[in-house]
Image (cartoon, rainbow, N blue to C red; front, top):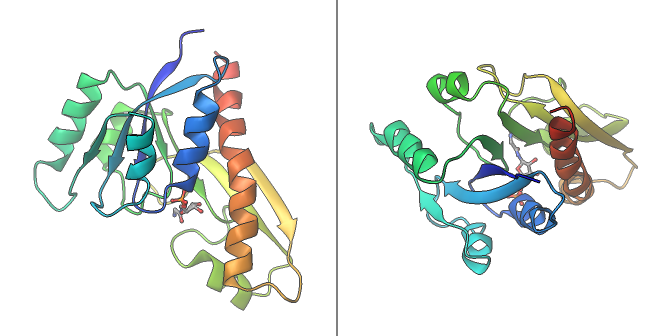
Length: 187
Ligand code: GAR
């Protein structure tokens, strides 16, 4: 199988990156992780790239030439698919239009509910019965593109932000690889 050369964008811990690296080592998994881009020099996720000898780059989105740099890296590593995994920046309209239906994101809520930041505190405040995670295509509106996979669980009275994060991320590690398999099964 010819694997899609994929770039993963991160900003922080990188546990979804680590999970996708593990899945991509399976010969039947549809993507190969060819590049990791972080906007944050201190992102722990970079250590996963280093450990598995995956090329990585820090790209400061405050610089005017940041988009040009991203395209140069994409060209160098022949990137044709993009996964956002805890990337806390907006992807520019230009990148989105050049990679239409080829950028996906994971979000820690049952979209369209709780788009944006501080998801867990808002879920608790709103006394939601159920929550979970969503993998979706990225378009030019925040957390708004077509959903590929959603997974959910019921909250209990003891849940707090920490427990919600732990339970949500446990589902993310199943949902993200499942979404990638689902996308490429169509082709
Ligand atoms: C994940 O839980 C992901 O859903 C969330 O950031 C976390 C990153 O964790 N993404 C967003 O909130 C995007 N709006 P990780 O760095 O350990 O993969």
